[in-house]
Image (cartoon, one colour):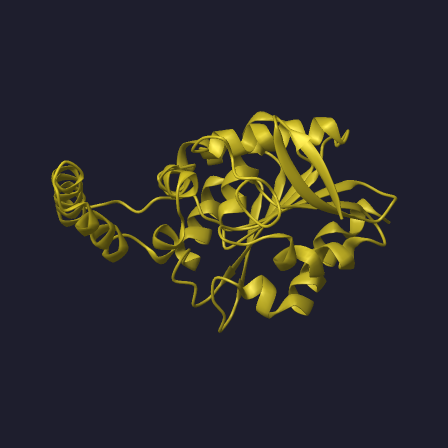
Length: 252
């Protein structure tokens, strides 16, 4: 385990292997290096692998302000520059896939593996915007009233489980992250990409994977039947076998 200071933020990471092309593992929201450790150990014989905790997760510091996906992308660029990582293979899950895609859109990337990839936002109807407006109006009233304890109750009842479990700068970061839509850049992401989705994923349904496969010039989709958003973790041996088949020509 190692630490490096990037833009004033302490970043914890694990390095595996000492030869071959460089790989970066990008975990999902509310996760850390633990979820990707099995992948790092598997690839260590043929690659140099970096498994990092994003700012605000695991043993890394929180960001000094609410980060957007673009901020995380630039953080990853500075991480790569500091460790002399060039043209890496990116392997991401969920939120980490947003960062991977934005990175690949701007900077050289050799290949990507994206599992449970987030980033294509749903089209939202009037009901959604009515709820958002009502929530914001109620929050504004309570913030300037004597009943501020009611504001905490409102926030606890509203939003997703990820939002409710975040606090401080990470709650504002979460709002920025989930509102980031990568749809417009997918057509310009050139690296060969393997998409792995769980058949029963409700967080990022396989329909999103099918959309990404159509939009990205060099993407191929695999669906793990009978599994959910964490298919890559639940079926770790199968996922690693798929990785090996996809990446084999990079070490043979």
